[in-house]
Length: 117
Image 1 (tube, helix red, strand yellow):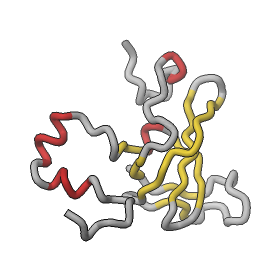
Image 2 (cartoon, rainbow, N blue to C red):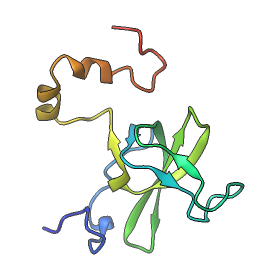
Image 3 (cartoon, rainbow, N blue to C red):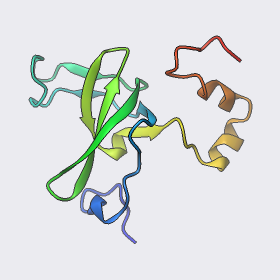
């Protein structure tokens, strides 16, 4: 099976990696490539570590999923590829085990409850 991260792969051959309503975090910085109205070309849209929620799932070029993500702290909605995102809601058990007690803090990221235990 081909690696879904490869740009040669047809992502649509697999189910979407994220679901509508899922809490995600940006893995990379995203700048305006000219498709975001009202902002200059190259202007920062999303910083690495920004948290948002998937609001819709579309496709691009009949090959890729594009996830519409609302980044609430910036109040912007940006179309992103799976390789640019990481889930905060469905982390694999082995990842949670490696995080140990720090995994509990992930429950509150993006929920406005960072001070809760």
